[in-house]
Length: 235
Image (tube, rainbow, N blue to C red; front, side, top):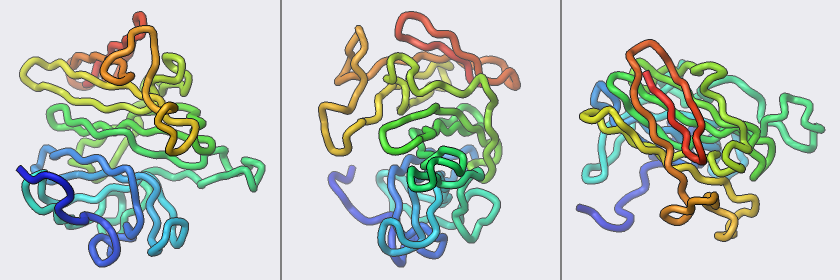
């Protein structure tokens, strides 16, 4: 088992050919076809943050894991030769008066695999630290194309007092139960006291539990909230 940093997996001369030169917030999962699928947040084609084509989120697909070199082979989305933004929106900001849709950026939380499908939880922002809502997207082709799961898979930014904005999740195919950690995005960048969830039942550094059980295939996503715990179903 490797410890510490062993190599860069993105950057100039590594993933630059797909326009992923500066990027952040990477999350990865092994897809049903055995490939490594990685999703990234704010991504720029230039060699400095803010330079070049700005997209978020984007996907790269390749091979590797924690013990083997990660090598990307192509981009997810409609163009395998360039990591295009997974769904269309314009990056808006206060300088326009928020007149171009009001979304500054959409960033990923985490990826999850359940059987032959991948799920992406994404956070929709109106400026840093101001989450409008989060939502779940689904891929049935190992991370190439993504489909929004509908209004039932949208969660307001103030859900659980704002402590369910950023998710970390996993799934056990043997028991068909999963666990999701719910976090709050910091309102002040770099300030540790602003991060983490702080509900009535503080657990493991401020992480709430969200349990879900799989429903029969095709029945989609449903959630029900009970006393600071959300139970839902992935199908």
